[in-house]
Length: 192
Ligand code: ITT
Image (cartoon, rainbow, N blue to C red):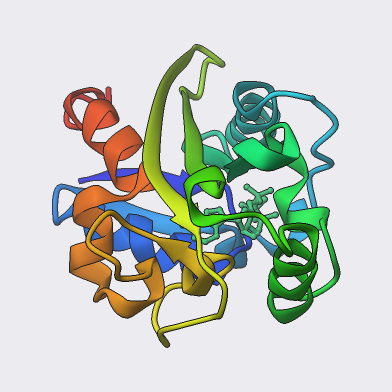
């Protein structure tokens, strides 16, 4: 069985990705490699940041590394918070409050948004491949639901439910991370 390190310290992402991989790959996380520490996300694209993280972790561990960079692009805010989604405010609750305030008075038909996820897989020899997944929706007016993480409670799908009202399995079936991951799966099954 191959070892794969998920280059993330976000527990919500790890839970989602672990559920997607299945039994063929032995998944480790950055918790198994505490000496690696925080990897600065200095790029201005999702792919650029995913690559920085995947390369750093593959280099430090000598193992295959998979990293995601993801975020929320809100049309009425010109695509913000985008790659700055994690840094938009200090906590999930404050990020949601800031987003709802920024969209105050914006009608439903102009609250369209999408989650974007870039995945980068890096080999022990530093070869990289990328996939990208998206998930379309709009920003609601109040937080709803207790599952998921981040902006999930205000991200409303076409059927009116928020992502936070879905189970892990339901979310993975349609999420940006799930979509990017499914595109990466054939490559993960052939880790050499
Ligand atoms: P790592 O860099 O350690 O992976 P992070 O939280 O800093 O963790 P990102 O830089 O990729 O991750 O930031 C993505 C942010 O976008 C994340 O913190 C959430 O606020 C938001 N986000 C991404 N995917 C999400 C999802 O599936 N549901 C809700 N919010 C999400």
